[in-house]
Amino acid sequence: MNDDEERQADGPPITTTDAGIPAASDEHSLTAGPDGPILLQDHYVIQKMQAFNRERASSTPKEAAHSATSR
Image 1: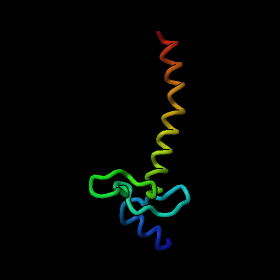
Image 2 (image 1 turned 180 degrees about the horizontal axis):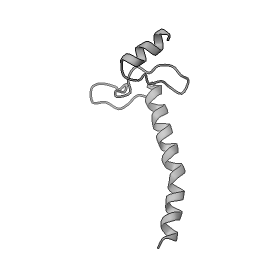
Image 3 (image 1 turned 90 degrees about the vertical axis):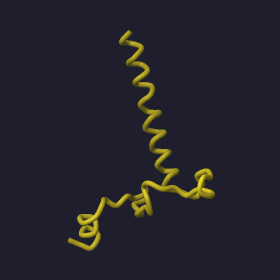
Image 4 (image 1 turned 120 degrees about the vertical axis):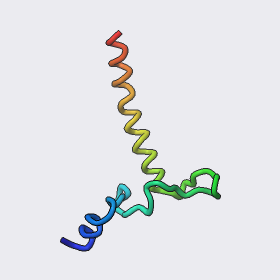
């Protein structure tokens, strides 16, 4: 077992970006001030939002077609 596997077994799972680079935090984002907007420089949050939007967009037509046929 190498060092990375030992660290992951002891603590919480390591979150990574699409490129496999460990992300600093899965719960916090880079903002302009304490109550400011999310900055586009926070690549990890932008990737998460893109994946969520694509997942949601791909499932919407199926659900809409299914609800129309079940009436």
